[in-house]
Length: 122
Image (cartoon, rainbow, N blue to C red; front, side):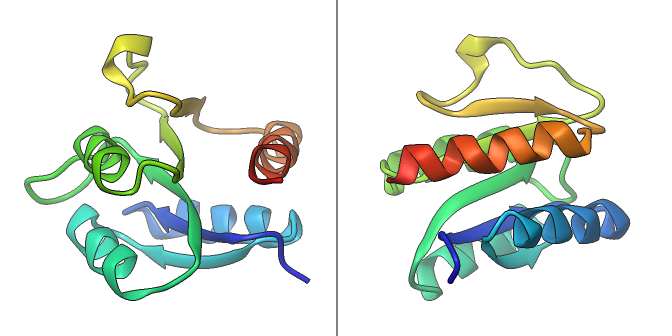
């Protein structure tokens, strides 16, 4: 039985595949995409998504921080994780109740993240 559905928004395929595996190993169902605009389409058309994990650097005119703020405004109860290996945003730059995970994340960090999300959703 899965805990919840996670939307993974990551433009780098190998990283996205690793994130999918990490979340699935943690008991989550995953949906994935490589752009912020596709993520918004998925959120509007796919029921049951409870968590969004997004990279900051995205192709196109919407980055991950902009996406995260949009999600917070339109889906206020969504769990949001923002991640980057290039940027360290200030707490003020993140949406309310969003968390930041630096990349590359260790297996231990992903396990802790999956457990923390599980607690938050229960």
